[in-house]
Length: 449
Length: 89
Image (cartoon, rainbow over all chains, first blue to last red; front, side, top):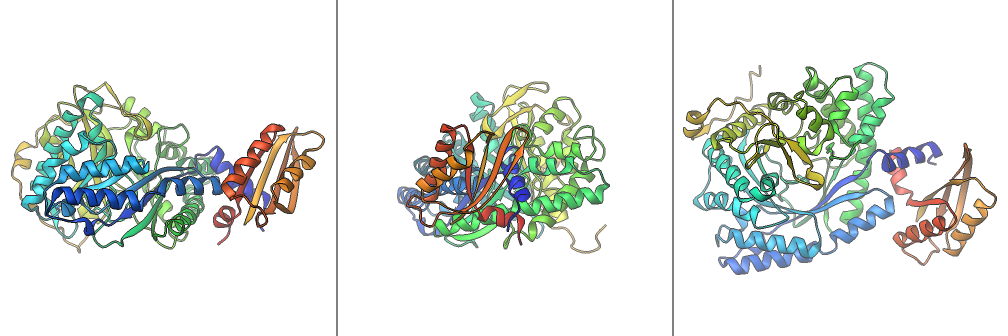
C-alpha cells in the first residue's frame, strides 16, 4: 500500500517542482515512401506521418490527465530525409510535406531533416546539406541535424567546413526572428538513432516502423531534493540517484502506456535532465545548490560530472530500455541559471566546452555574434566533435550567430527555446585549419591517457 | 481502475459528506480513507475504484475537479499506477 507521505511527495513533484514528461516522440520509418518522383515521395511522407501520428496529441493529453503529469511536447522523428529524398532529390518538397503533416496532427516539432555524413558525403547528401537553410526558413516545425563525426569514422572535416557555412546561411535567412532557424539545427558527433529530444531527433535506419520514445525531465525535482541534503558529495550523489530513479519510473510508465495506446513499439526512455526557462526548472541551479556561487565557477565541471553520472545510475534501473542522450542538458538559452550566469560573465564558452566533456550533448543554444565567421563556427563544431569522438560519447553544437547582434545584446526565441545573451567567441582565426578539409582519423581505442 | 483521490480545502462541516456524494454520483467506489488537519486545512487521501463508472477516466477527473471547485475543495483524481511506479519496484 502506498503511504500518504509517498502520495504527497509525488503530488508535490508535479505541482511545485516542475516534474514533467518533456516529450513523447513517435519515430516513424519513411523507407517505404521513397520514390524517384519528388511529388510522390512528398505525398507519401505526408500521408504516413499524418496517419501514424493522428492520435499522438490526444493520447499524450489523455495520459497527462490520467497520471496528473504534464506531457509538455508531442513530437515525431522520421528516417533521415537525406536517405528518403536521395532518389528524387526533392528535399525541399519533403520538408514542406513534413511541416504540413506536423500542422495537421498538431504536434510541436518534427525531426529527421537529417544527414549522416561522418565518413563522407555523396553528391546527393551534399545537395541535401545545402538545402537545410531554405528548409528551416520556410517551415515552422521541421528540425534538422547532421552527424559529422563518430568514434569509429573520425571527423569529416569537409562536412564540418560546410556546416559552418550552413549555420551562417540559416542565421541569415531567419534574421527577422533573431536567426531562430539555427535553434532547429544540430551538428552531432556520435549521433544516436533513438533520441526523442529536439532538434536532434531522427529515426535511425535500424529502428522499427513505429516506435515511442519518451524524454523525462525534472531538474526542479532534483534541486528540491538536494535542498534537504546537508551531507558530503557522496550523500549528494545518492540523493540525485534516488530522485532520478523516481522521475524515470514516471517516464517508463508513460512510455509503456503511450506505446500501448498508439499500437507502437516501446523504444526507450531518455532520462535527461532537460531544463526550461521557467524558474525552478534549471540544471544550473542544481549545480549552484551543490555549493557553487554561480554555474561557471571553478568546480562546475566536477559538479556536472557528479550530476550526470548519478542521473544515469539512478535512471538506468528504472526503465527496461534506456537510450537517447540520457544525462544532463546544458542549453544556455533554456535554463534560467545558465542565462543569468552568462549575462554576468560567470559562464563562458570555454567553460561550457569543458562541461560538455562530462555531460550529454554540447554547446547548446548558445547565441554568438552575428558576424562570427563561418570558419569559426566550423572550428567550434570540430572542437566539440573531437571531445565526443575521443571520449566515445555524443556531443553536438547548436549555436545561433544572431544576425546583426553583438556581445552585450540579447536574443529572444520564445517558448521553450528561451532567451540568450550573445556570448564572446575567440577572435583568433582557425581559417587555414578549417580550409584544409579532409578527415581527422578515428582515435585509438587503447592506451587511454 | 484503482485511483488515488486527494482532497484539500479549508476545514468545515460536511466535507466528507460532500466528497462521498460526488463519488457516489460518479459511481466511484471508496476503498480506503485517511484524513488529517494541516493547520486550518483539511487534507484527505482516498483510495477508490472506478470499475463501475460509466465515464472514461479523463472525464471523471474533470467532473470531480469541477464538483470540488463548486464547494471550495481542491479534488484531484489520479491513476494509482503513477504512485506504484514511482515508489515500488
